[in-house]
Length: 268
Ligand SMILES: [Fe+2]
Image (cartoon, protein in one colour):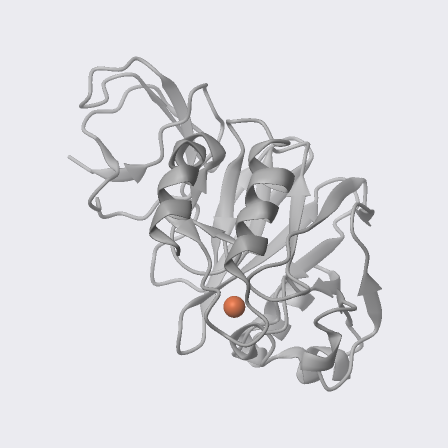
């Protein structure tokens, strides 16, 4: 029997990023029923915890392959690739009707990212923040004619960029709209991007499973990141929002929001 890692949501989803090995803290799918529909595997019920949720899972490529498709619906598809020495997650959001894509964080391994940019018609890069591990491929993607955007507050962390990301704006990717949410704290100019049509939040290093991003680096501020997470994410986004961070595994607002007071008390 094949066992997949799944992230249980409070409603049926047509998604999630799966690897072929169960990990601690994640529910093991112990049985599967249903069928495959294109590249989406439809699973129903029979989760080990006895719940009866229906899941469709898109497990597109083998782990050894370059990029993983982690979300698919009628409007868009989202890809993830992990690059660099500290395993940065780089995401590509692509509009299905126009084919246009945007890349989130030109983090590292520029040849790999340029190949994906070509494959998925990426014209712009959105930087979640200016830390070194998120920007190593910026010069090369700019050289290839792809515009890179970053917030004003983090812009001096880049040698050069093409446009400034503003808070609370809509960034068009073909027919898709990515909302920008300024979430200072990890860096002064940290920015999250919310794809409302798919209920996905690209959280950069602001929010991870188990807490906020580090605030020990220059420009970091714990009170500020807590204010950002509480005021701009937990109080605004649906509980079912899937959070896709700049490193590591995904989570949801529902999973994380009950723990805010614990994080405040522990101070990190
Ligand atoms: Fe960072």
